[in-house]
Length: 41
Image 1 (tube, rainbow, N blue to C red):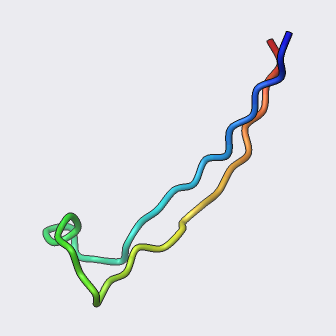
Image 2 (image 1 turned 180 degrees about the vertical axis):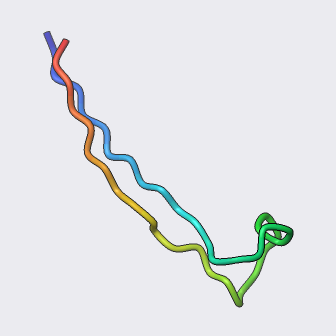
Image 3 (image 1 turned 135 degrees about the vertical axis):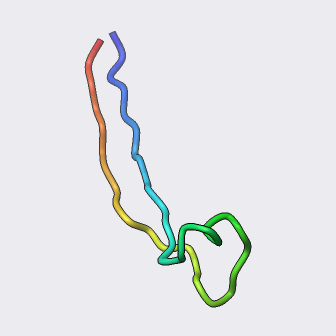
């Protein structure tokens, strides 16, 4: 069987909820968390 490996990266912005999806140079997107998920079949 083959080993499986995934790296997960979560992004976010410190923006008021109402403007979260709008483009903004004032509130750039940043990496919030990273995880390494591995499993064997």
